[in-house]
Amino acid sequence: MSDSEFDIVGPEAIREGRATDAYFDRTETTLRHAGKNPHVVAEVTADQFPSGEFEVLAGVKDAASLLAPLGVRVDAIPEGTLFDGGPVMRIEGNYLDFARYETSLLGFLSHASGVATAALETRVAAPESNVLSFGARHVHPSIAAMVERSALLGGLDGFSHVAAGDVLGREASGTMPHALLLCFGRGEQEDAWQAFDEAVSEDVPRVALCDTFSDEKDEVVRAAEALGDRLSGVRLDTTSSRRGDFRHIVREVRWELQTRGIDDVDIFVSGGLGPSDLRHLRDVVDGFGVGGYVSNATPVDFALDIVEIDGEAIAKRGKLSGVKEVYRTADGHHHVGLRGGEAPADSESLMEPLVRGGEVVPSFDIDAAAERALTDAAKTGFGAE
Ligand SMILES: O=P(O)(O)OC[C@H]1C[C@H](OP(=O)(O)OP(=O)(O)O)[C@H](O)[C@@H]1O
Ligand SMILES: [Zn+2]
Image 1 (cartoon, helix red, strand yellow):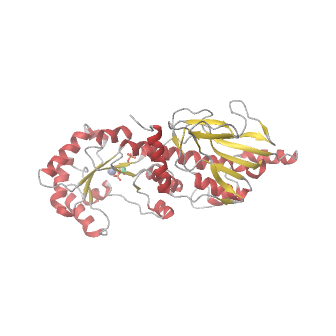
Image 2 (cartoon, rainbow, N blue to C red):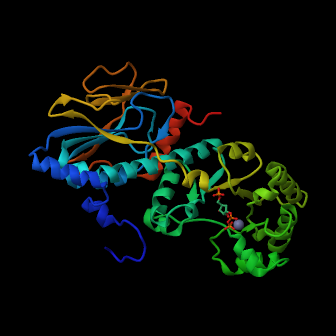
Image 3 (cartoon, helix red, strand yellow):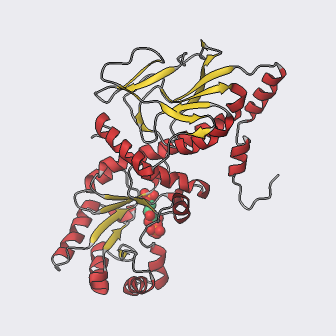
């Protein structure tokens, strides 16, 4: 029993195959006892048939790292690709070489793909706006890097979690919490904003949180008067009990700034926002902090199913036997067919080599994957209202 500081399943357990469901231990014991370890092809699939409901594939980088040392051959559709049916990954090898890794494999793909899909929904809802991932507080700290990487892969512009930034090699960003204003006390907002301006390094934009004690309009005018042209933005995180017509509040704030000749102060909003809020506010605000809608996204319901054993097509009830290819047709839809079958006219086959000879084939670039997701979103009409 490990006496580690926190109850967290670490990378060692994942690598050793202990991050698995107990029935895979039983499976290994039983198959070894019976002298069975067939050569299989297994596919990761969410929907057997194209559903028209697209999701973003993410988590492929960690999945590749997990599978590479196992002596299996893996193909997958690239990270960031939108899919709506058929396999997203195919594993070929002796079943016992990878059986116990199913749990972690699906966990890597399911959770990250759910978060990336939610992030893309917010991205396409406000394509011109600055949208930051602020939801790390809602999830277990051990998965913050997955959440923030998936948010970037879904097209978001930045994130708030510092340690996730260490993992991703990117700078976390954010403004200031209500706790800062509270520590200076009621009526002392100017002192708080000015102390922030004096203390925080110059490269951090001066974005004042303006909704702690009094009306947003009042606090914004006071922040502008307190910081002058050092103020680069204001954040309104108006709590739901006071929110009313958030759009109207933002327009009042913009009016009070503009009537004072202040045109270069950005207005950011946050707090319980989802795609419909972003669509409703995108023409009056400059940026969004989106938290729970992205970080708390439902994982994609992937399953790993054997579809061929020793060259014979086979599948459990509810699944399609045989090794399949996935194609994207010219109209952005997907087509699933048996490997070796005829590809639809004007289609592209989506599966690419992921692991060969123990090596991960592709390099992984978050920005390229995000670009792919945005391109696919346009092709498929993803998130269109
Ligand atoms: O609601 P979500 O979409 O998850 O957004 C997460 C936002 C909202 C939250 O406000 P508070 O809970 O008031 O926290 P703080 O006082 O630190 O701003 C905090 O500012 C996060 O950045
Ligand atoms: Zn707050």
